[in-house]
Image 1 (cartoon, chains in turn yellow, orange):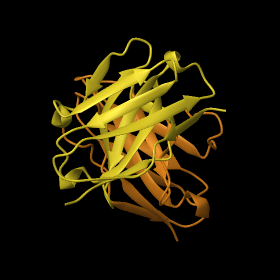
Image 2 (cartoon, rainbow over the protein chains, first blue to last red):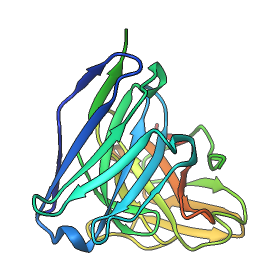
Image 3 (cartoon, each protein chain N blue to C red):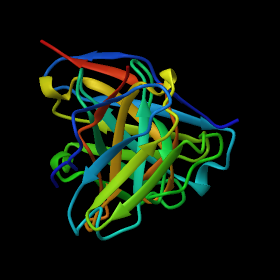
Image 4 (cartoon, one colour):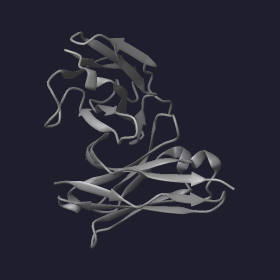
Length: 118
Length: 110
C-alpha cells in the first residue's frame, strides 16, 4: 500500500532552517511527483511547491521563492523540503503528498509540525 | 496568486444535499480542468475527494460529485451523512504552473 512517512516535529528559532523528510513506499517513486503543502494553526491549506521525482524539476510558490528548496533521493525514495530564514509565521504543519495529476495529490503524509519560536 | 473563494461555512441535515462553491479566475479554475476537492477532518491530513473537476478516486462514495461552470467549480454531497462533517478545500492548477487553494469551507451536519 502507498505510504508517505514524514520526519518528526521540529522546534526552530527565527532565522534558522528546517529540513523535513518524506519517505515513500508502495509505489514506483520516480513515476510521480511530490507536492508540499502547509497549514498554519487554525488556517487553511497553502501550496508550497512540487518536485518531479523523475527528473528533479521543481516549481515553487512565488512567496517562498529563494527560501525553499525541494529535493529527492531516488535511492531511498525520499523527498525533502528545506525552508530557510524561518519566521514565526512559518509555524505550521507541513505535509508531503503524492502528485497524481496537475493540481491533485492522492496520498498524503501524516504531517510534520514545525514551530518557530524564540 | 489570490486564494480561490469558498463560503466559510455550509450546513445541512442528514439525507439532504449541499453544494460548496469555489470561485477563481480565467487563470485558474476557468482556464483548466484541473480542479480538485479535499476533505479534512480535525487533526488529520487532507483526503482527495475529486480531481480533474469531476473524477472520483477509488473508494470515494458516489455521493460526492464535482462540476464546473466558467470560473466557478462546485462540490455536491448528496445523502449527507454525519461523517461528512469536515472542512472542504478546493484547489486549482494555474497559468503559472502552480496550485492555489481555496480558503476552506466548514461543513456542519445538523
